[in-house]
Image (cartoon, each protein chain N blue to C red):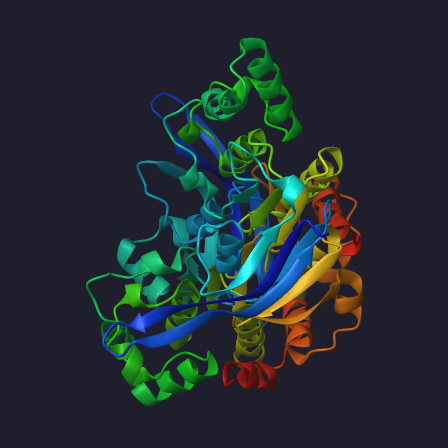
Length: 253
Length: 259
């Protein structure tokens, strides 16, 4: 579905350029959940933004190719990109509460989606959110962080995209909501033959949710491992990360 | 005599002024903390964990109940109970140098240049704060560095009990592990008693010998961490454990949200 072959993503500073990502190569197939694991500041968010040319042109330079079906995303018109981001590749960014226009009520977003209230209600119910009627009258700042996160996922799912990209979906949400998101991602991929790409530092969520996991550090991406293979990876950086996780999980006071 | 005795603490707030409707944040909470132990408090958001911390530290006066600190734990010039708040970045003055932030507390005890320099050095190095950053200002530090600087300032008051409020949130697993090791070290080196509030059961299993599970302001279950987690008696504890393992079914989630 998506074929990524990015040579480099660089930040353009006054006289020099700083390379943030190098040789990012992977393919996304239908019917699978992919996760890119990485620590804070490893470039995860930059990576997903680079896929659909979301990085500001004057400040970043992305060299390479990203093929979505027949369309090359790094070198196509803004109109085509907008259509693809609207219908085919949907993002849910990390800072959920700030993704809304604070002056608009939630009704505005329901109307934008062009989908019948009945169908929206079904998803709201699934995510244990308040009813269509109740949410419609609220402003985004009246939602808690966890609610905003869930609502954004609902909003992205309503577009029925081919690829759903989630940036740190578990940060700031409690375990119950994490479980909900996990279940929904799995159903979404299984029932519709869609794909999900997650970037996160939450290794526990990655192992539970994903078919394939890669590790990003210092601008380099490892290959995508099967989840159980990741735990036995011989790559030193992956091993260090995994070992911290094992050490924290297995010890007792 | 335990270091701290929390007896029948209740605390509620008025939700609506007109109706005088009350919302109970803490309901009849009791437990004891022994000298030198690390005790964990777990539960979901909104369960009253942070409020309980503030009540223990004396920042909030409870409606009913009693907090007793053993008499040899009292301090003359500063509070013997300190909290490392969740929003540590906002607690640290962004415009002041870290050395200054720590010295300010040390001066309360003794005005002696050599003493202050030695203490500053030993405290900052004990929390793993690098020497080359002593003269940085708060805003020039990363989140993790700010947290360590804030912790150093708290330690400078020579507290008897340190309350950690969600110290691990928003950190990757390597930083979490380093922090767990640091808290264990401080606990051992300074015989510092700690209460650690966290929704992360995995980390509490590693850090805290005893655990208290809080739900809607009430103590649901408490005991030795390993025993509680390996053999939970209450449904809510079981729910938390399978939620953390991401093993909940949709039916279980629905049931919990309808309660």
